[in-house]
Amino acid sequence: GQQLNQSPQSMFIQEGEDVSMNCTSSSIFNTWLWYKQDPGEGPVLLIALYKAGELTSNGRLTAQFGITRKDSFLNISASIPSDVGIYFCAGQTSGSRLTFGEGTQLTVNP
Amino acid sequence: NAGVTQTPKFRVLKTGQSMTLLCAQDMNHEYMYWYRQDPGMGLRLIHYSVGEGTTAKGEVPDGYNVSRLKKQNFLLGLESAAPSQTSVYFCASGTLKRTQYFGPGTRLLVL
Image (cartoon, rainbow over all chains, first blue to last red; front, side, top):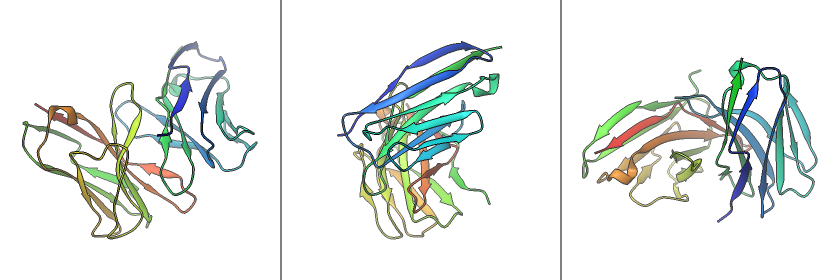
């Protein structure tokens, strides 16, 4: 089946630093989604991307849909302690099923 | 508007016991999904439904059954629980734009 490679697996940063994470696939996706999961909670949708090359922002978060349609990245600027959590990318081809990456665990030190 | 809710939040089962997890959504979404989340493995799709009365297998369907008798509800059943089914189970529902919204999860421990 399709697989998403998400990197890095974990990040330890200082408050105020910028963060970048990405997902790559051997398959083409029509949609890329980025989710954040807080401890003990379900994933929450951060950004949805529907077109190759699309660049979308949500506050301090910016995500891009790669031109090849096989990758996407998420940037977080000026990190704060509440950014701590696990970030997941998800890709979709046709239909409604999503393929998820394994997640990036983000730790922000005050 | 409660979004996606899941019942129960936590459950302990003995091997061989059965149980049903309930997912409810009040957003009138056509699509609903059941995932399991295990450490280091992300989210894996168990079963999903594209509308009332329809269900389909996902990536890891063995040992589970589902039913979608009402549009707003999606039930996940374990007929004979096994320790390998210890996991956190998430339900999600989706829009026409294909985004998915998740519930808070059900933590299941099978002894």
